[in-house]
Image (cartoon, rainbow, N blue to C red):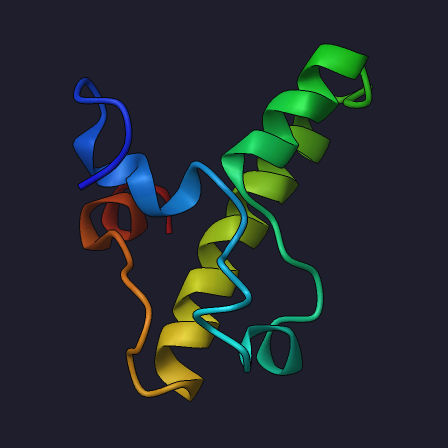
Length: 86
């Protein structure tokens, strides 16, 4: 399992979804979001309000829920993250 051993359940969210592996992802998820994109936005100072950062984190989780639901659970998600944030 790739990712940071200090945050083992975060690994599905660290990088963008592999579109070669999940070819139908963009047909289900309109606005992809992942932690690498959020990190870039933080580093660039793109978040002028903490609510905008919160929105992207919630979008990332909503995308995982939506894809897992509509694609029949083909992707890996993090139920503990959903429980804490959702």
